[in-house]
Image (cartoon, rainbow over all chains, first blue to last red; front, side, top):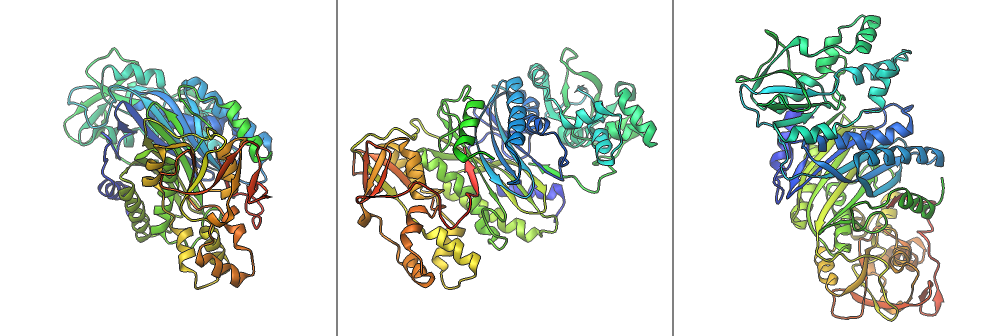
Length: 300
Length: 300
């Protein structure tokens, strides 16, 4: 199979946006004042068998609402395809639905349709529809603008590792992986002053690179603090916490660029003219998380 | 797990439509002048491993466009989640994409976003968005109106059986299963005079029952002709073709009710006051296809 970039380029050429203002290649498609996004979760790829169904329901919704947040849109509603093994109980379905419902309530949106199927493992695909009069796209950053971050980095990847390796005592990290929250309010606030915005699903550096589309960044290392729980985990594991912060992914934080400091994010760096990402004076490679052989999925 | 009806009722109670005009329980959700629907295809459940990727791409799109047709809506665009095994080649992806693209061209809509993942088998979920100023809903039929059908019944189920059992010589039936086509033009035409409409995915009798929501039908057996290829298949198999016509499913035909004969469908019966479905004078049971132990999926 060809590389991710080639695949997206193949799809973008094959599928022009038609009547949509923005098609393949941003956090969401744009049509009139509505935005549309879809994201799936596959058992064994995006989550483990023991993911509590309540949190799984929440996560399936919230990773999509995070894409709406990154467009500066308010959620309207979602549709969901759900496949799961026939032997699952009503209790599982009830817990899962409670999770979906709680995420919808918090996001002030509703589930308006879907499709259920049996399958030998869990597969969830959600489409979310949101509304905004001025969607915030990628690739509009200007040199000299600030780079701002809403949310924490690195916790979810560490939580996933703790769960996969059965390392106990890191509940905060586990919860960051099980139950990420979308930054809806902050996305709406940032939209008033941001020139571009993206949510962090594949890792801070990689998503920052995608946001800037050819421009670069100089990041201040002090403004990218390492969360205490992540430090504790990395000390135990004997690994570098900075890798988790820069490349972890599944953070569902927001990155935006702006000429103003008055938004909801904290300033972590500045947009530069070339395509490099610098941490202080050191260039950092643009890549996914090194502990993983391949990205589980590719949004387009 | 509870029954299908209980599950849909559970979901409908749990998820009120919010800002949508129509939520769970019709062919598509309705918001302002837009309609939204989602349908998934799971390998081993909805299709077999040898489904040609070109036709699989078409079918994933077209089963969704069929739901738009049943609302009397014109397609605008689709989003797609696709998971498939890592060992799949670029050629598979290219063929599949060609299928998606050809169905989008015919439906005059575009693919504007999606999500790709690896998985150990193929999962496809499509969300389709369409537009109409007057969506045609279920449950609005009036006693004495005619019942009209657009398309053929029974072919797809017979084709699926021929493929599953390796019975050769029934290409027309196989194609009905591999490559169903949505009745978009007819759906738009019918919308001008239909009081209610649905597409046939789970079998004619079952979907007719869902369309009428408490009302009944008297069907004329002569107006439900058995297609020649289906007769030939059933003669070979020693089974009754009428079962395939009434209960087969995956036909993606349209059923609508109307006081006028001037629509695109042929008249197959009349709406009655009670909840029974009569074929001539004989009551036929409301159920799914008898050869299958359970329905593969449940749209909501």
